[in-house]
Amino acid sequence: MSDCIGIFDSGVGGLTAVHAAEKYLPNEHIIYFGDTEHMPYGGRSFDTIEKFASSDFNFLLSFDVKIIIAACGTVSSVVLPHIKNKYPVPIIGVVEPGSAAAVSKTRNGRIGVLATAAAIKSGAYNDAITRKDSSVQVFPMPAPLFVPLVENGRFHKGDRVAKLVAQEYLEPLLKENIDTLVLGCTHYPFLSEIIQSVCGDSVTLVNPAEEAVKTAHDVLKDRGSLSDNCKGNPDFYVSSDIDSFKHIAEIFLGKAYTIRPSLVNIDKY
Image (cartoon, rainbow, N blue to C red; front, side, top):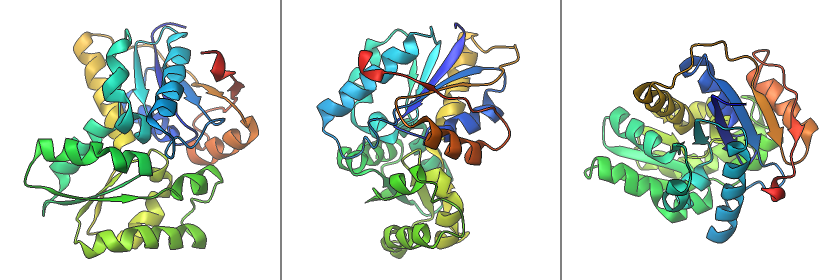
């Protein structure tokens, strides 16, 4: 299928980008791939993350996509700067758009970043934010437990375990008087209600997946490549555990789409 947009993540997290595409890319057909067999990417080595990301790109390119959104904070932080120029279509990560939004929203110049351990270690968000405004202070915090919570459906506002985990990660950042918080893994916006309830209304949350979709819209508009046709239902693909993906996707996306994931042997790519 030509004239479509590819979105991938290590699991269900990239569905936050699919959700944003409803608003910002309403006429585009989406091909979504969740590498559920290999998730999470966050604790892996550079070489392993690069291998997984290359397979993800190659799979999406088999659909003749016109742009790819790497809706994975780890891939965007760790390997995307090194490999994105290898591919024939524009690749939009989440770090640069998310960082630009955070700088534009902060009022006191104190920005917190929640991300996977690999993304935090890479320093990508810190570098991107301070390149945009060197006066801003960045306070990073790895939040590895958020990914398995989301992948297991533990992201509803009343979930006591999720709230306890959120409090542990957020209390040190709140002590630093942050007024803006980057949800630097696309799984984390699933937990937005819980995170906001812990932070309070004085902290603005930034969803980099949504910002990446906005950027993709702008790139396609500049190229004259925006579609004016009805997009139809996205095509969903996963590398394992179809039933779990379908269950969580239906909860998160609601009745907006029919969720019928197809299984892919991603190691062939």
